[in-house]
Image 1 (cartoon, rainbow, N blue to C red):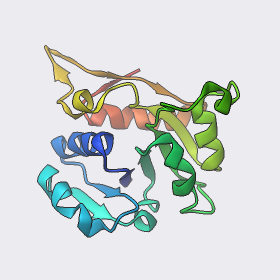
Image 2: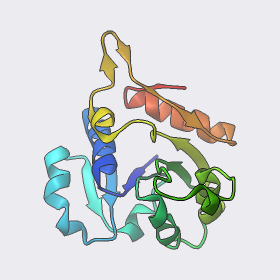
Image 3: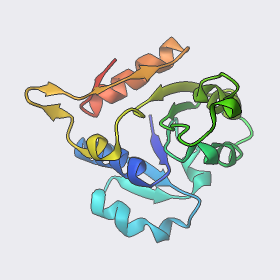
Image 4: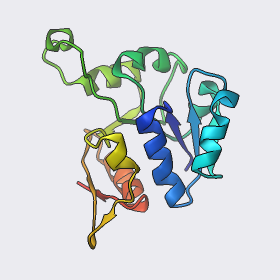
Length: 168
């Protein structure tokens, strides 16, 4: 299983921190040239690999950590998302509810990434909390996961456990 984080802002870096803490390799990508953020990735850990968007979308499991408004352009990176699991880390901040037509924002992500298994998760924690070690006071920080695909939810729950979180 290989992993990628698309988006290397505050949330993308916090997710990269989680992978680095556990020594799990992950590719990170933006629309920029990977060299432009290579030093930031190296500062997080040796297993954080800057790459192009075209390479990142080859991963089996992809964390979508971009602004909600940017998801359509990321979705265009592949014509077929079959076999991929997308973890929707986005939040539709600033998007008027009427623009969503009464649907959850993840419905738009699912439509854009047609064919992929979708899990909504890791989006309820701010970057500062997400970047912290989830082991707290003898317990673990919770991450909420939601999906209509039981296999994908189980798979991402296991990954969350591997990263040190308590998935619900």
